[in-house]
Length: 44
Image (tube, rainbow, N blue to C red; front, side, top):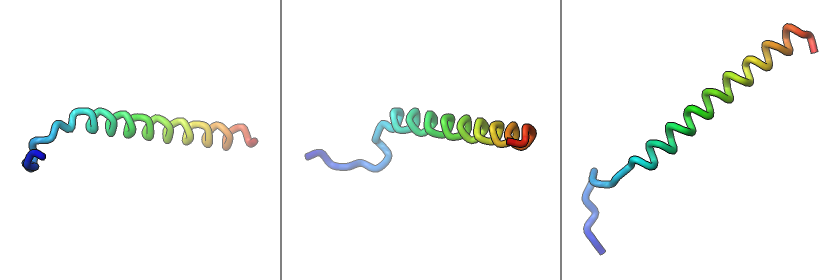
């Protein structure tokens, strides 16, 4: 096996995945807040 060298791993895919997760989470949170405000205004 090769020796592990700290800081040489390519993390591009992990960073893209994390960015996608954060974007999804933020958009979902905003959508939930909008739906809750709508329900509060309509009085459902």
